[in-house]
Structure formats: C-alpha cells, structure tokens
Length: 176
Image 1 (cartoon, rainbow, N blue to C red):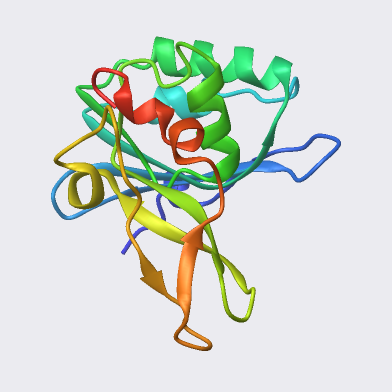
Image 2: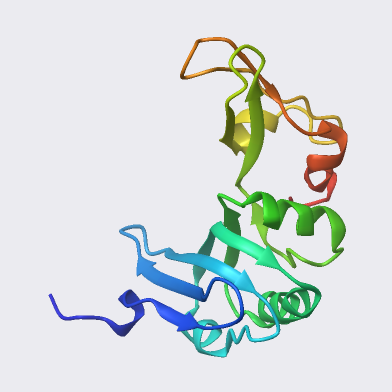
C-alpha cells in the first residue's frame, strides 16, 4: 500500500495545543477528517480544504479551544468547502458551545453526534457521553430530553450536567 500524504497528520502550531488533522477515505467513499487541538488566529485550513471533496465527515471530538479569531477562521473554512455533504460528528463540548453561540458556525453541515456532560449522583464521577442525534433526539429537537445513563463505576444514575435547553439549543436549528 502506498503512503498517501492525506494519511499523515498536518499540524499548525499556536500558543495552545497545536491544531492538527488526519484525513482518511472510508470504504463507503466518505472522507473522515479528525481535527484536534486549538483553533485560533494561527489556524490555516487552506491545505485541508483543498483535499476535501464529495461526502465529508468532520470528527470534532479533539477540538479543545476556539477563540474569537478561530471562530472567524472556522466559519470561513466551512463556508468555502466545496463538498456534496458535510457532517459534524463527535462534537466536543467546545464545539457545542460555538454551535449554540455563533449563528453560522456549522454552515450547511448536519450535526450527527456530540459529547454531553454527565455526572453520577452517587459517586460523583464526571463523564462525557456520546449522543447520536438520530438515535437520541429523533422525536423532538425543539424540546429535547436527554437520555439517562448508568454509572460505569457504581451503577448509579448519571444526570445530565448542564441545562438541557441551553446545551441542546443547536438541535432546534433547521438542518442540525
């Protein structure tokens, strides 16, 4: 198998955790792009956007921080993508905050999954749970209710550790 340069992570350094991405073509033809690090004024998505065509899934679990200049860079990146379909998957809490705050942060992307904060009422362990939009919110996105989970440590009930109406407000946007 020949080495594809899109398989090697690309790195953009900044003052925080370096922004990097990895592009992989899946068996179904989709491009899976894992992005991690900090999106700030040093973020340059031009190399990445040139590689993206067709159906693209951006896996955003690794994004740790986005400052105001980073928001601008991100919005311009998403707006300029020439792709057939765009999905946001495994959105980190940092990304969820931006989805809820910045009107055009997702552009025309559809959010398919995101990480949500939970805490055990018994042993107080904190954990992020991956919530699938179709599986957990298929019936109501305008007034979503959060799913219940059991604590992996003690078996107690894990409660959603945010205000659902605030954390999940991006779900009520058309196309989310």
